[in-house]
Image 1 (cartoon, rainbow, N blue to C red):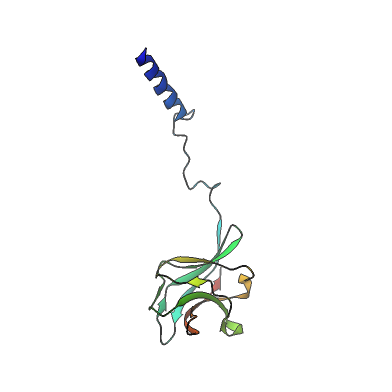
Image 2: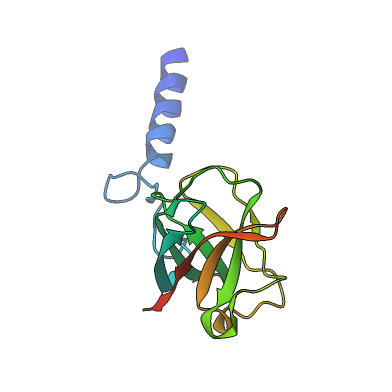
Length: 145
């Protein structure tokens, strides 16, 4: 009797773990229906100032109705004090006060969400700005894709 119960449990377990074609019932994690669509709209490369070195790339993208600034995996800054990501506009004189998105905590890739009230269409630059001393560290001019 004990072997009959074990056989029944094993059969039920196998039936529950497979679909009709005999394969696994698990779907891949990257299934299109579950993934958020990411729309990259602009890219640029950083240049530093005479006092600070900034290199790497940046891009602007939209996901789930929210705009983001991404510093690429190749992003690097030379250790300036209080480096922050901000936005700017060439025709308005560069860095725009009130657009700081966040503190850069390490070189490499990082992502910053645009704050409510900021319209990405008003900006064509990403700035690395020292808020503590109110000086530029570097910037990237954006090219629309």
